[in-house]
Length: 312
Ligand code: PGA
Image (cartoon, rainbow, N blue to C red):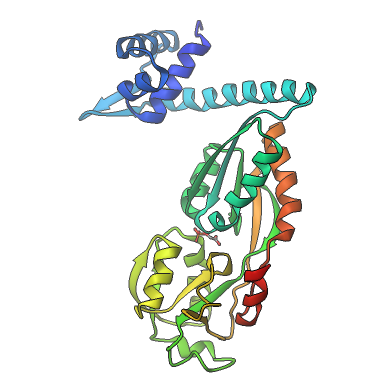
């Protein structure tokens, strides 16, 4: 089969954008050139790679297979370049990282210091929820993933590096706010604000409530931890949130952590990648860095930890 790396690059870009025009813009070539490259590639493969259904471009089965192959080829070439740079004594190349929504409270800060240490490394950081991250992991789209609760149905390398306690958050004037050691049954019938379906935080909260047969009233679903904190402060309900997402709302008296049995829900952060995947030089450097530097991140698990955690 006669194909060139250039054709594969054009194909990969069209598949990513789902559009010949946008691929042409990104690659700074004309749209007819993109079309002719894809046509030549399809001729070499002997099957169509895309099909167009009501103006929308879809990969055919053959196209999907070629995309997986393309990712492998370009990943291997990237790894090769990184190894050569490493032989020359520098760390250089691309790091593709995908983290769950809640990890955005500490990963970007760590990345900042990592980039200062290795200025030759370019980072792409995808932030998404637990379910979407799993999908990306299955498709081998990134080098490394950061999440709590690695999925049991995927064959993964997973290194635990930090606690991720989930606490029950309420407005300070909530009737349970002054009580200690509250029975979890007291939450039955309470009004809650939930993260969106697919969120790992939501999954953990639902599991705990199912175990204790607690039925809560869901008033609102929100895809952002920041919006949830505002909604709690506004009196719209209670919610469960990672302590990493608390950035002063408890210490300044805006919100309070309820002392309910079963909380905090104890989870941990993991850095994961698919078993059998060869980590690039750059991804390995970041993993090593993460495992060491994350130990300096303060983790608060109860209200009295806050002044310490905030000032640390
Ligand atoms: P989430 O995941 O941001 O999707 O809720 C966080 C977690 O799994 O703890």
